[in-house]
Length: 466
Ligand SMILES: *[C@@H]1O[C@H](CO)[C@@H](O)[C@H](O)[C@H]1NC(C)=O
Ligand SMILES: *[C@@H]1O[C@H](CO)[C@@H](O)[C@H](O)[C@H]1NC(C)=O
Ligand SMILES: *[C@@H]1O[C@H](CO)[C@@H](O)[C@H](O)[C@H]1NC(C)=O
Ligand SMILES: *[C@@H]1O[C@H](CO)[C@@H](O)[C@H](O)[C@H]1NC(C)=O
Ligand SMILES: *[C@@H]1O[C@H](CO)[C@@H](O)[C@H](O)[C@H]1NC(C)=O
Image (cartoon, rainbow, N blue to C red):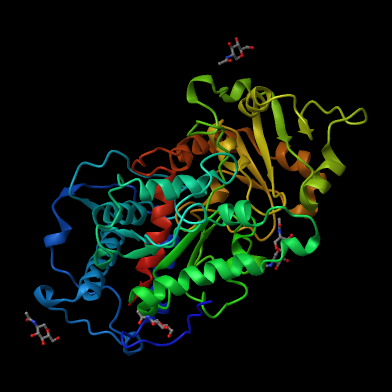
């Protein structure tokens, strides 16, 4: 078994924590002072490229690049510096610069800083390149579920490997980030069979497969050692995925994990890792429900206050059922909480005719209901603890969802009835507005779910200097 030691290689990597804080601050601070935007049709690529982060001694990098003679990594860093500078400038001038007409302009309270986001997205589309390692064999690597609740794992992988993505790097030397295309869901599916006793759950096999994979690419190419994994990432929606790195925390200390199970109590690091929305895809479908057959009532026709249907998975759901499950004693027509509904058509019809859809955590923090609710124009009610929400560096979830702390599940009806009609309508409109960020398109389109996932990676890469 290959074990990769943590060692500073000759190409010194230093994280620039100052910049990290800065980008988060930039995205979080004073979101919508001035919504006037102007499109300046000019290429920022030809503009002078001031260095973005202060050339701190800690960074240990030479900032004076000679463009013609830059090595791969210098060229990459120079380009990222230009992107940072463009984002800073957009924030300063409160206007974005684009080299083409922008089809969509993020506006409003759901965005922490709409202009920063727009400029960052523009820079991403213009520059961002992802190298997917070719090593490894199916079915554990290069193959992941395309349907059902882990589908986002396979859809992302397939998007990057299909050869059609404009974000695909042609060579590793032009890549900003490196994708390790193993699938935790496939590993569990193919290796952990059959499960007969408790010891068959032992995570050792998962650890060894992933450590081996890292060992192979780190031994064969300079990229992992160069950054100690800081520009490398994995994507997984499986509950066990966070545990990939638990046996060898040192090896993975800088690695970016893109996870559905974004539980901060289980070591999820919101600034380095990225949360992935969970998406339930029926066979052969790209969206939770085909648009044409989707129930999506206007607010006045949403006659159910709150709706939930799902299994009694985990302690939060059990609490929910204790208080609200529909049975003979509880037939509240306003709060409809079911363990079983006869079919999916009824499920989606209920979502489309409810004002609020309950999204409690199950066996793990994420739930596909959040995306389903958004798709059905139903305001999500988040009932979870320690869940780091997807795209939270860009989206202010408190503007289009309601959070009910687990301890207050019993007060759910009062809490939801306490939301004024005006506030509800505002959130309803915003839910419809953020929908585009939760729609899966293949190939990906601007600002859709896959772009948002890539943007999460792009932002994290902007926060690191090699
Ligand atoms: C590139 O830079 C190196 C030193 O970093 C120098 O030795 C080499 O001659 C340069 N090459 C060109 C083509 O300027
Ligand atoms: C990366 O580091 C590991 C452990 O020090 C070493 O075995 C491997 O050969 C290095 N990779 C390269 C490409 O030098
Ligand atoms: C997890 O959530 C609980 C309850 O909200 C909170 O008390 C605790 O501090 C959280 N832990 C972490 C690591 O976020
Ligand atoms: C909304 O409800 C009204 C009254 O019940 C009904 O006439 C109308 O067709 C409904 N609209 C939709 C879009 O379902
Ligand atoms: C999050 O992690 C903590 C610590 O392992 C665990 O107790 C909790 O149940 C997890 N949350 C969910 C919803 O699984």
